[in-house]
Length: 272
Image (tube, rainbow, N blue to C red; front, side, top):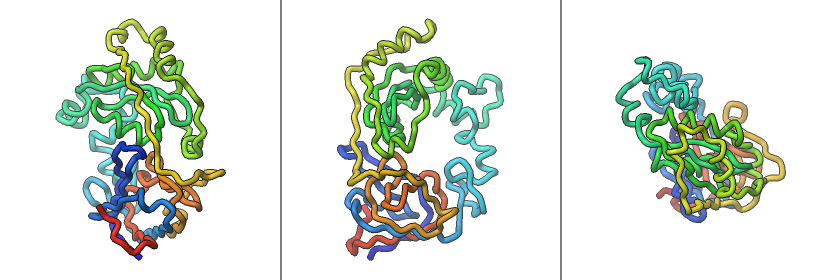
């Protein structure tokens, strides 16, 4: 039996076929794909630490941040989840240097298919990571905007016609509404406001993703360490930021900063 202990980080992955996943537990990096079908045991050790400053706290926010960090860091500002509400030009940005390197740079607006079709945005050259994190099986970029705010404004305009949310339960069950993304792109062009037409482009490549899944669950039950400090189950698959266990699904990103002990029934070393 192999045992690892440390603070959890969100799942890392490489967009191969299928997607190759890694679990970060402290300094350990565990290759997960070869553990499909293996019994895993997670023991929450009762400690939580901020993913940025390392402060030990009783409660974490926004995927692993302590309260002081979530209320002061630029990456946790409201405009990160609502880019169209960027306030850089108002002089109230939390960190102008961060904005220059993360927000005032090209962003893609895209169409992705996970449970159904959705519109979203991501920094250019980060699109593969974004799509895999959302459990997308197909995706195409449809526009390139010079700033995050402009991408957010276009996303909002398109969201009046296409959903901007994913049904995570359907995504994990593999229930997908079949949609031709290229055909949908042509329809969207007709409703995009005139000022954004110049940023639309036609990419011919359809990005497709497959995930390491042995079997799906009939009923999706979310499990977490706050209610169940001990989680034991067979790993049936991985998709997005979720481990699919025979006892339920565990959102690893949601538990960033939780200190755990992970026990694997396989005796061989699994770190990579």
